[in-house]
Length: 255
Image: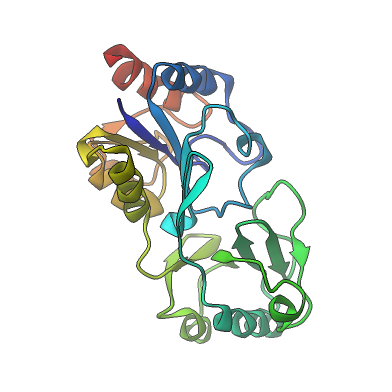
């Protein structure tokens, strides 16, 4: 039995397109053969694309880059953004007028102008620094996504409680100490498997750790150069059968 960890953006979906039928056919076949399928994503549970929220082949997920780990529908592990940090972040982005998204387990909340990502449903708009305390006190925020690169002022608010991953158009605030690998290890321990039994597929720098740690780390054809250098295998592009090829060659052929 293999445990397969699949990134979402740039791997299973491409913008608003996907997941793709060719990939889904092979994933479903592997699941029926007894392999375990997990999403491994920087997105929080609430910010998953609608097309992936209720798929029958999903055994669990590593969400928020390890902040939430779900196995068989139950939360195995959770570590939230500190609640005392939320009003400070709200005030920062109310002042600088950039967009900021708070990704939670049941809801997605936003400040600022139009957002970069499609969260399936429009995020709840925030208007005051104390909105989480007064209106949404039960919400568990496990990741923050921000517009562009961070200024020193922004970093001073986020660090050290959150680790910052910066990309061209956005940055991620990940709960300190959590990674896709820590999430994968928690899943494997419960399943009685080792890293050698794991396959990880991804496309961006936040996949580097899990690609290096898994028994088989696979970079998409559209992956960043840093990931391709660390991967054991490079597959086709997203939307061009890249995930399907991995399952055909390394999962189903060995079942």
